[in-house]
Length: 507
Picture 1 (cartoon, rainbow, N blue to C red):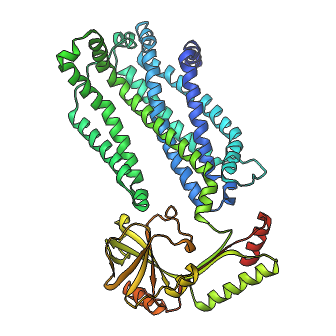
Picture 2: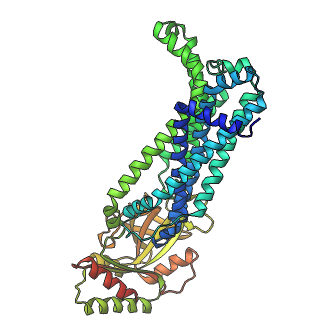
Picture 3: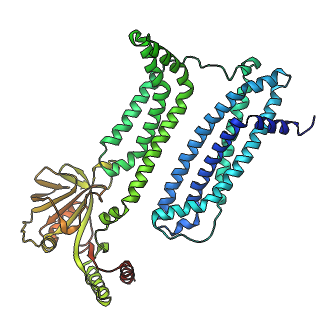
C-alpha cells in the first residue's frame, strides 16, 4: 500500500467536510491568536517602561490562564460536535472493510494536518497583531509607543504546548469514540438522540448553595480589602454554581414541571418540556460556558470603559494637588529640610504656591471592634476589620482649619473617613480617650473616602506627648519626633513646568 495513502485520504476527507472543518479551524486560529497575544504581553520587553510593570504582567498572566481554560473547554465541545457529525462516515469505512486501526490512522493524519495549519496560521497572525495590541495597551495607559518589533519565543512555546495538548486530548477522545462503537452505532451516530438524564438533586443543591454564596459575597462584602481576598472565591463559586444549575438544576426543574399534570398536559408545554429534558444533557455544558463567558465579557468591557473614561476623576481623587511631596516616618529636622527645599525650588522658578496644605501625622494600623482598637500584627486573617488611624496634633489642626479649639489630655476630635463609631469614647489597646466632637468634614486634609480601601479615621489630640502615649499603647516604639510628612500645593503653570519642578525637587 502506498505510504501516502492515509495522508491523501485524510486531506480528501478534510476537503469533503470543509463545511464543518473550516469553522472549527477558524475557531482554533482565533483562540491561538488571542492566547499568543496575551502571553506576549506577559513577557514583552516594552512593558518594562510602564510603572509597576510587575502588576500588569500578573494581570495578563491571569488573563492567559483564563483564556487557556476557556480554549480547552470550548475546543473540546466544538470537536465533540465535529466527531458526532462524522460518525456515519467512519461507520461506512468500517462496513466497507477498513479496520478501526486504519480509521485511527486516517484520524491521526487529519488531526496532524489541522493542528499544523491552525498552529502555524494562529501564531503567525498573533505575531502580526502583537505590535498593534501593545500599541493599543499603551494608548489606554497614555504611554508613548516604542519603535521596534518583537517576537516572543516564550509565547510561541506556550501556545504550542497548550494547543498541542488540546489537539492530543481531542484526538484521543475521537479514536475512543470510534473504537468503543459498533459499525451500526457509527452509521446512526449522527442521528442518535439523547437518553433521558437522571435527576441529580445533590448537584442541584450544590449549585444553589454555590451560586447563592457567591452572590452573597458580592453583594454584602463592603470592606475593599475583604473584597480583594474574596473576589476569586466568589468568582469560582458562581462558575461552579452556574455549571451545576445548568447541568442538573435545569433538568430537575423540567421534571418537576412534567409532574405537574395541569401544566404539562397542554399542547405548547408538552412538546417544549419533553424536548428540553432530552436536549439539556448535551447542551447544558455549552449553555453554561456561554453564560459564564458572556457575563465575564460584559463585566470586563464595562469596567474597562468606566476606568478609561473616569481616569481624570480617579487622578484628581487620589492626587488632589498639582504637586504633592510625602514621606513616612521622618524627623522634625528632615521635615524642616524638605520645607526649605520646596520653597527654594518654587522661588527659583518664580512659581507661586497656591492652596498650600502642610501637616505632620502619626499613622497606625489596627484591628477594629466597634470603638476598640488593637495592634494589627496578627490580624490580616480578618481583613474586613483592618483600620488605619492617623493622629495629628491640635496645633496642626487649628492652623490648617483656622480654628481655636481646645482639648484636654484625655479628649480628642474624631473624623471618620470610612467606617463609623457610635460610641463617645475610644479604647486604643487600653488607652481610653473621650471623643469631644465628631467632625463631619476635614477639607484641609483633602480627604476622600473613595481613596481609602480600609476603615480610616483621623484623631486630633491636644499635644505630641498624647500622640506618643497613644502610639506606645499601640505597641509602636519609634522616637517622639518620628511622624509622616505631607506637603501639597497647586500652581498655575503648564505641564512642562510641573514636570521640571518635580524633577528639581526630587534631585
